[in-house]
Image (cartoon, rainbow over all chains, first blue to last red):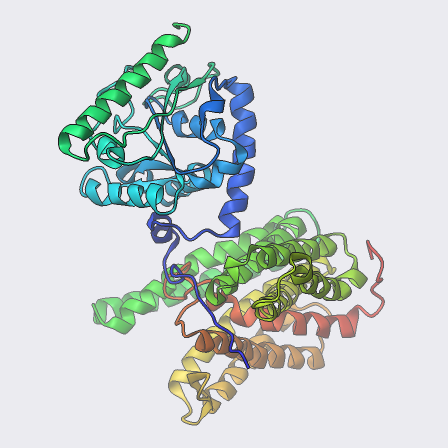
Length: 242
Length: 316
């Protein structure tokens, strides 16, 4: 007779806070269902309240792995990008989120994990380990990753320099990198403001690019970061100035 | 139980006072112990367990005070949480078809309790089992399906249907009194079982299941619970000596059996606790294991004596 084999969840004796921070995550139906309902609601909210438009939506690859890179001015950014993705990709797109900010309280972590599938990114103490997590996600699990290479929200809405980590992640690999520019999120909900205002938000998607030829060195990483910075800048210029 | 608030209900207020009295008294005793034996591991773990009670109490008292809809909602969430924990511990949670079907069946059961359709409430397990058994057929899969179907059926029956009787209890005229009694009695019975198990008895009750449970402790616990039920008799409407005795036996014996049932699950799986929601207690199942076993027994005891005329049709 065949014996029953039990494979308990590895997170069984972890508290909610601990299991939210653990990555790679153990997907459960509950989180999947919450995310589905949450995203349907958020999509409707973004379409009406922020009148979200996504020119160039067709440039997003149909399946992972790919890296979505954008400017960062507001908490709306990650959700706006998730709303720009097709429904099928919601559960397969992970937003790299600052561990020191989003994984500090249980409630904040829960919102981040449910809505944007947040990946805890330790930008202060151990960014190397977090970059390895991201690399695994892209190259082993073949999922999509959303990243804000500026490393933090801009305080005046301008585009800051990109960190080199983004270059280290993709230099010398064939992972497609899709640049995007989020327009209007700063006016809708800037840093420090409490209530989001009903302003139009536009996510402009650029042509995806690869960096197979760039050497995976420090210089290569800097070059990739500069190239992506330029790509996002160009997307900002090509829209109607507002 | 009515759909309106019950915060002003005299029975409700008495039970809230009892709970607060017990928690504050034990807190005071614990405080003295902490001062006397600071850093002692037993005292420290008792403190962690005690703190969790201050979370558990409002979780139970609030829905009961908010009335029937909130109570049925809370029982539904408790059922879902218990099943979810069971599914995580057994590995069933990786099969989303079965987990989803059990979630759906639990929601259906709560809806049936909400519209007071007693006949369907009793028959729903048949439909649930039928649904769960056709899932492998619809998916055209056989590998491991007996295990998944078996675990799902146990999950629905034990965590959904058994606990669902608390929802139906809320439909009865004196539902609030019964539910208040049951939550307090089962909680105190757990504490009594823990205490008497430590104090009396040497012969193990089921040594392979739980080495801490002894015959002496079990008998002592039933006696303590009987005294407690007798003390609460004035707040149990319509209950005579026979019903009081049966309640004591159901809570006293059933509570300990429920504990042992979950111990079997844990032992077979080789895990210590099924979750970490309540520090010092474990997960939802570690806290509510005895209530699951007691609920249907208590409900059907009441139904046998006082609800024989209950209609099987919706709205009955």
